[in-house]
Length: 143
Image (cartoon, rainbow, N blue to C red; front, side, top):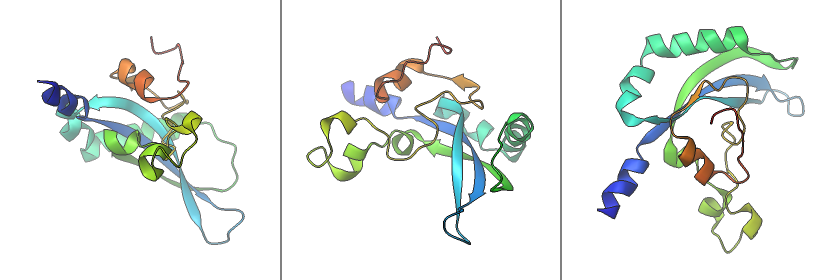
């Protein structure tokens, strides 16, 4: 019975808004800055959020409302679905607990905006999961 619970809890994804920037220190290189729009979305909604129409709707909303003063933004934006396992991968998951300082065991390896409720976050479908996965997460706006 415990096995099914774990499988069920791993069955979410996260909708992220990406903005491309030119790297000012390395000419010709680019990177994405991620913002989480919908966090811990149940898998049953995947086809809805993966549709072109929904991605375009999210993209238009985020492009319109995103406030950014960076001059190196390339005006390229997109929406991606990030699976739960990838979204919550920690440094300890990547390098092993023995090689990572215990303080950093729960620090995220990739920054998808999961540790902060930045301006694009619209909804967290499972706040308890977020709070259990993220070190020091205590944003009160989503309660």
